[in-house]
Length: 178
Image (tube, rainbow, N blue to C red; front, side, top):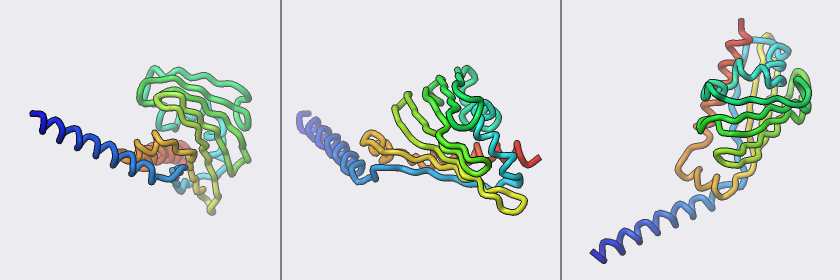
């Protein structure tokens, strides 16, 4: 019995050590990016991103909590516009503020998550006209503290968040390619 407990303890200690070692090898920052070509002018897409009130029509997180509490502050859209949310475990709690809005080509957003994990990131949308279409790139980047690195050992954050970005870009496409 005692030998079995020692073996179990050693196996658990080794598993923890492996996770910690693997986490230590992860980069100190992360970046997740997705893009889409949307057959619409940048001028039609830009206002949907630069106005947080419009996010209800395309954001992949808006439908994940029917009871989501939202609040808006600052200007209606563009630089200084802010959006805070509080929701269930699927959307958490946080705040976004537009730091830069260069119509119709770039929107930079300060993104602060408070729950379920605290994180302070930057989201950036770039819109590049391509004839009668626009290439829209959505990037989120930020620091990767050690807890985040440990999560990356067991979860593929790029795939998980990337799927949401792809859904959001598809929703933008549906709204603007009419």
